[in-house]
Amino acid sequence: LPSAYIEEFRSSLDVELSKYVGKAYPKGVCAVYCTSGKDVEGPGADFGLAVVISCARRSPQNFCNGSWRSIWTLEFSDELQFVEIKGKIQVGAHYFEEGNVQLDANIDCKDSTILQ
Image (cartoon, rainbow, N blue to C red):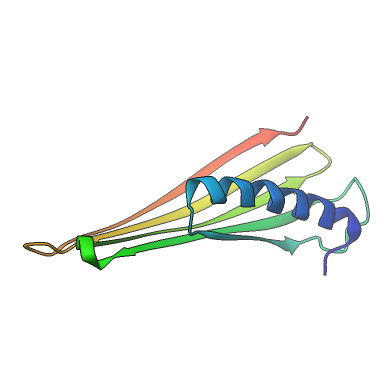
């Protein structure tokens, strides 16, 4: 288990992410995990979190299915008050009325920001 200091970051992100997923992906699920620095007890050390979002919608009566999967890594550099965000998004769609059309799209994302 992560330290109380890291758990505060992790649980705050989990609460806000759950709100977002509840609105954007009504049948979606999400989770936030500590990936590095779980023993950090206070400011001054680096740590990492991973965010997972998944949602699938099956609608065979309408001849279509779809899914969204994304994994995000957040690397916090406490000394620089900096966070680097990397993500991989996978979207799938399948339409099968009068034919069979499938889409499988993947995208890698990267950004960074300064914490205030």
